Amino acid sequence: MKKFILLFLFLVFADCKRHRVEWRVLDLGIAPETSLLSQEGKKEALIAKGRINLVFFGFTRCPDFCPLTLSRVDAAIQSANLQNKINLIFVSVDTKNDTPETLQKYLTPYPYARGFVGTKTEIAAVEKSLGAYSKVEKGAIQHSLFVYVLNPQGKVVYLISRNDPLEKISTVLSAATSL
Image 1 (cartoon, one colour):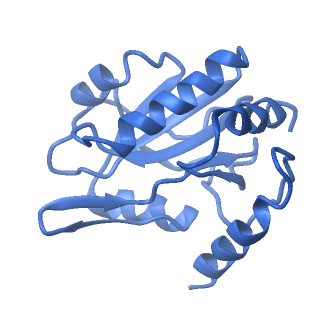
Image 2: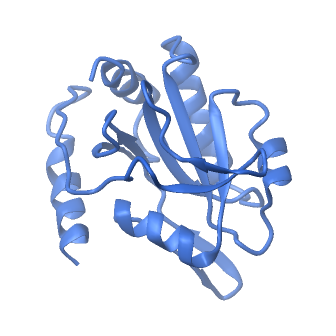
């Protein structure tokens, strides 16, 4: 519950000035040793050392938010020429259908992205570490829609909202590379 309160307070105060980035290291993050099954089919650490890590929870059969979010983040990365500085971590919340192979195909347009799958317990642990969630309700998967910006130590320093304008996302990602 404490993590959710911190997340709420962060969201309330995070966007006080238009496109001005104020970093706040939250008590949320991914430990460097956290690993899941990668799109290459082997257990790998989620966090890439020496890069800014972005974490997005989604699933390959998502009809709307997931592809739209990936496209917006991609446009921001391309416009700021950050492909070699960003590691986009796509964690599938569809433990029944997504496999390393489906993730590899889904993420082909994003060479800086790495996809991960895991058991329900493993995914829930990663979600909990970031204050995220996913659930199946009436046959539909619902999940957190933020892109979590992590500093090199794996702590959350910013949340990109699905409603953020492209120029704001570009500003955040450019500024993040100097953390």
